[in-house]
Length: 164
Image (tube, rainbow, N blue to C red; front, top):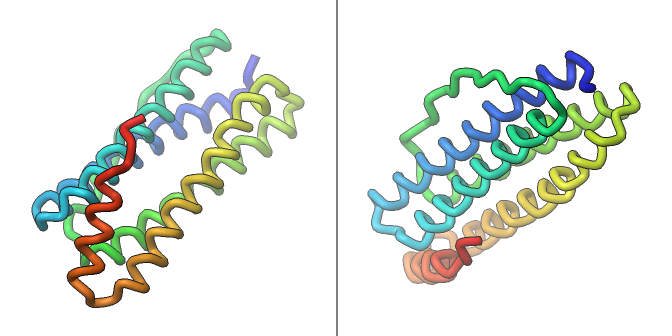
């Protein structure tokens, strides 16, 4: 059985994962509106991935015999200052998600909740990948600078992201 604190925090994590998806979908919409379909596709796939993360928490809470309590999701930002600013924001967002996963893990450790620690290990590993991906794209965009050719090249490359 969960500690009340861990259950509450995991229910909050569902909201935050859904918000992440909502934010990335908003970023995708920005890229679509600015004729960058590759960046839009990358963000749309990222949004779907975040929804899947929320559903992992949803299933886990149910599997442990507890009740999911959904919370209101904030409206995401809709105006952005370009591709680099978006991916810098995405990287900072992923770092905040990592901090949340670390919090959940520390609560599980404190409560000797080995099942939750095992469940959360997947998210710990996933966040390393999430931060790495966003960080790489930030660096590519910085190197591209004001080059429209480089931006379109990156757009083409990111558009090839597999839809897991």
